[in-house]
Figure 1 (cartoon, rainbow, N blue to C red):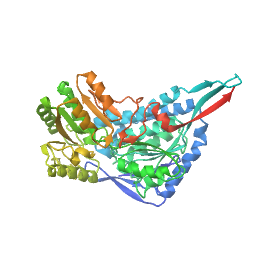
Figure 2: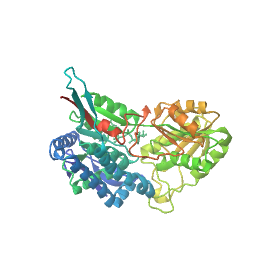
Figure 3: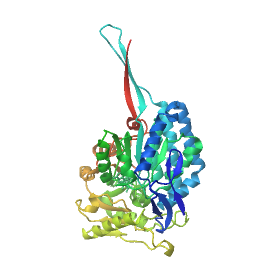
Figure 4: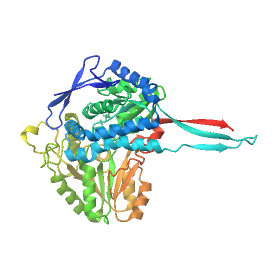
Length: 486
Ligand code: NAD
């Protein structure tokens, strides 16, 4: 069993209060690690170490030196690829190919891409006239925000955490990271990487624990944290925003979603079925960009529902590195209980259960794991809880539609506004719809195709701000204007 410590000022340390909590495998519910919880004093030490590093060795580096170190981090993650894959598989229980093709390479890319971005960012200047005719020159300089608190979720832990740490460090900030209590392993491993490539002490700190009355809350309330970037549930975002209001700290929020997938009758049918299948069921449906509401044009509705059902019924449950398996469990017993409560609610609300709705058969050694069946419903009104609320499980409701206007209105009739995926060969219509659907990201004939230079974030209840490429600089730096009289 692993013993997971906090990483403060370049050292792996136990919490001052001596508290630990168990990390359990999603596959078997067995305890796989004992994690040292950071108390208020530990969080304070981490924040003060980060503050000291900001004004010490890290702050004294040139941008070129900083960027070289970040390339070193990316290379070291790649060199230790299998360690990260194993740790993330242990934490999440998701298939190896999800780790090797998405979660871990994206973690390395997050350091490399933002090192590239910061090297190439232009600066702004304005020449102005003055009454004496000599003029003045204004130019803007970007400085780091300071100590950034990073709070990450469990669903794609390494990818989502590094998506914030990469740009924060590229911009010259220092960070204190609170990974999810469900997924402590890869963030801790990153501490080893930071030390081995020579990132100065205190630049990257990790504190373990929970949210309320634990490390998460201690971090967001700490007065020496200058900005907070958070990915997680909208409800948690609300609590963090009120903590950040004290001291006027800036926030960047990537929150929940209840995303619509829209399929027109003229779409490439097989590509649309594959795309919606991935968007609804990848990572056992635990993807913020996932599609839990599917709208299919009436002429192909029955055919589409049957094709999606066939794919959902073909998944093979098992361990991440089992070559005969391709489907993993939910993250925790608590999350399984939540998803199963929505499965029951769908039936109460009068859904037709096209497939799933229960717990699959798995080998006896995995029986205590958090397995649920991919589930498809039809026949519910739009007001039903399972059509309106984020479930974050492997499930979707499919409804027929008859016109573009109708489906735009259906897609927008939700409090969230993270993403949408539209499947059609009529690109004029697709572009028109992209401008009308109230989300931060629209995919046309694709899903989860990400270029890290593009703006990423949600509208409505799905977030505040945009990260990605130069957009990340808006959050991770402060712009100062200098006016020079000529
Ligand atoms: P969560 O909000 O429960 O927890 C996220 C993190 O916040 C964890 O580290 C948790 O310990 C911490 N936390 C909880 N309460 C806190 C508090 N009061 N103060 C400080 N920290 C606190 O979310 P989750 O269950 O880990 O993740 C799933 C959610 O994340 C879903 O809603 C999903 O849509 C969302 N998500 C959004 C994006 C995006 O980019 N928009 C990406 C991934 C996940």
